[in-house]
Amino acid sequence: MTQIRAFSKRLGIPVDGFTVKTRCHWQAQQNGNAPYESAPVAFTMDVDIESDASEADKRRLLAAAQKGCFVEQSLKPGLVRHRLKIGERWVDA
Image 1 (cartoon, rainbow, N blue to C red):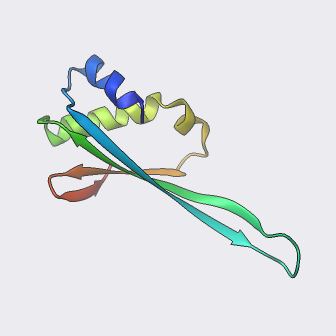
Image 2 (image 1 turned 90 degrees about the vertical axis):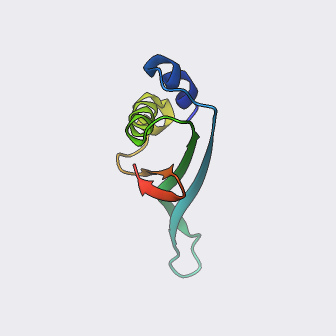
Image 3 (image 1 turned 180 degrees about the vertical axis):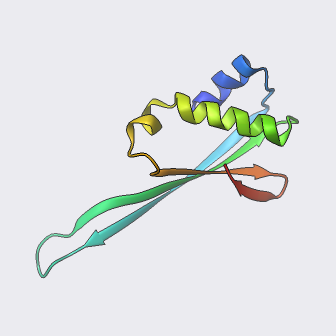
């Protein structure tokens, strides 16, 4: 989410700061004594953008940052999920 600051300038959306917390969801399977095999299920990213911008502008900024993130774009589609903090509630982004 390093793109948030860069795209905030390009889109003219003021950002005072932001916090991103990520949870990794994995599944693992083991057959007998064999080593287990694991795979990612999802990455959930909670994004709190500190700004007086509207919810629509925050959503637009997060969408641009998602599209501009090289790592996120190289992962399997749908593997990364986002939530945006609006006031005191978390909403899917």
